[in-house]
Image (cartoon, rainbow over all chains, first blue to last red; front, side):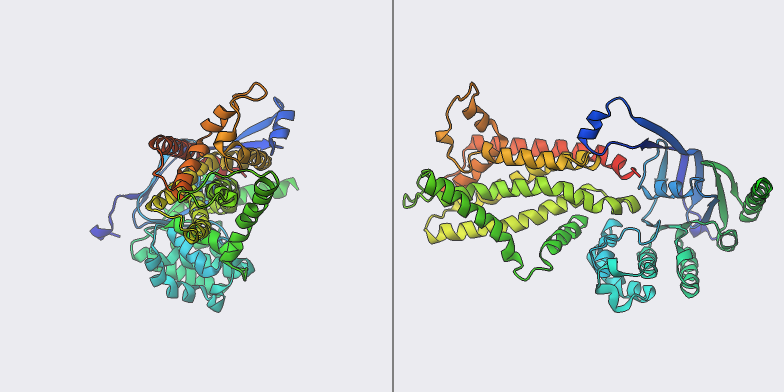
Length: 259
Length: 258
C-alpha cells in the first residue's frame, strides 16, 4: 500500500451527485394514447441518490453495501456511464469495465465469440486485442465449444461466467462488479475472487457492490454504506460494516417485533 | 470499431440462415422494378428519356436508376427504429454511444445496396451505356444514406417512446415514394393541380436532387449539375448533423426508462 507507484490520482471521483428518476405510471406508449390522455398524466419523481460525494483512489478495492433499493446499483451505473447524474459530476479515469448484471452487454442473437468482440469494441478494444485475449476468456469461462453458439441458448451460469470472463480479461483499469459472482457455483466463485485479487494487485481499481458483509470484509480495503440514497458512512471496512450490520439487525428486530 | 460490429451483426442477421444469401436481397428491388415497369412502362406506356448513347429508352432502367437511391433511403429510415430497439436492452447494461448501432445498420444497408447498384451498372454495361460519371452513383447513395440517417435518428428516438411512430413512418414513406420522380419523369409533372404547385413540391423535395445526381451519373452519363450536387450535399449534411445532435441529446434519457 505504501508503494509510491501505487499512489495515483483518484480513479473515480463522485462529487455532490444526486440522481432523480422520472417515473410515470401508465405512460402512454403511442401518440394516440398520449393525445387521448392529454393533461392527465401521473408523473412521479424518485430520488435514487442524494448528494453523494466519494473518492475512490487508484488501486483501491472499494466495497459498497446497503439494503435493496438503497441506491448501490444506481451509483454503480452512474460510475459506468450508463446513467447520467441529475446534479453533480462523476469522473472515472482509465478504461472501465463493468459487470452489472447477469450477462450484461450480450446480444442474444450473436454467438459467444461475436459477443466477446462486441463487448471489446464497447470498451474501446480492437479486434486484434480481443483475439489475443480470446483463449484466456474461453478458458476462464469454461464455456468450451459453446463459444460459437448463440448466447441465447446459454444457461444462466454460462452467461454469467462468460460475462465475468470478458470483464476481467480485458485488462480494465477500473472494474465495477455488481453482486453477480453470487450466481456461479462455489468453484467459479472462488476463481472469480482469486482473479479479482490478482487484478487488484496488478493495480486495477475495483468497486464491488454486495450484500455479503463477510465477502466485503475479506476483499475490500474501503467500504461505503448507502442507505436510502444517502451515504451513511465511508471508511475502514470493519467500522463501516459493524455499524451497517448493527443497523440491519436492529431493523430486523424491529420487523420481527411488529410481526 | 463498434460501428463495424453492428454492421456485421446486421448483415449476418439478414443472411445467416438463408441459402440464397446475398442474392435474396436482390429479389425485392428487382421485383419492384418489374412490377412498376409493367404498370407504368407497359400498361400506362410511360416514356423514358433516352440514355446517353441514344440507343435505349427503357423505362425499367430509368426507374431502376432512381430506385437504387430510394431503396437506400427507405431501408435506413425504416431500419433506424429497428436498430434502436435491437440495442435498447444492451444499452441499459453497458455504456456505448447508441448512435453507433444506427450508423452500423446504415453501413450494412449501403453494402447491400451496392450489390443492387452493381446489377444496374452491369445491365448498363451490357447496353454500352457507361461512362466515368458512374463515380457519382456511390456519391448519391452516400448522400441518400446521410439524409435518411438524419431522419432515422429522429424517428428512432420518437419511436422509442411512442410505438405507433413506425406505422406513421411507413405511411409517410409510401407517400414519399410518389413525391419524387422515380416512376415518372420530372417533365410530365404539371405546374399546378388542385390549386397546388405540384411541380414546385416535387422539385423542392431533397431526394429529388439526390436522385437527379444518380440518374445523371448512371443513366444520362452527364456530370451532375452543380446545383443538384450542392442542394443534395446541403440537405444530407444538415439533416444528418441535426438528427445526430438530437439523438445524442435524447438517447441517454431513453436508456434510463424502466
